[in-house]
Length: 117
Image (cartoon, rainbow, N blue to C red; front, top):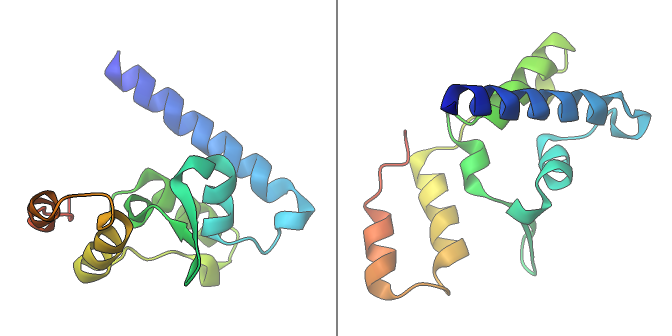
């Protein structure tokens, strides 16, 4: 059942991306534009940096990132490929997004996470 649910989710992601890029207004859209449309709950607006995407979408094994990159490559749009973020970049992003919401103890625990998985 878990595998079937995972496959159904991946199929929905692929279908949404295909629909998204088929729209002429999205011809030059970036990964972040698509994520904002497909998962608006994972996008925050900040005063300093503007749009902020949940850092998990940049993990090495992120399904969204891998699907996006495969399609960008197939469309010969390699300039749109999104590379995984480094551990330091992910930690900094995580620290910025949760530092105001968590206790110092909780934040210290999160810093110990291995985000490569």
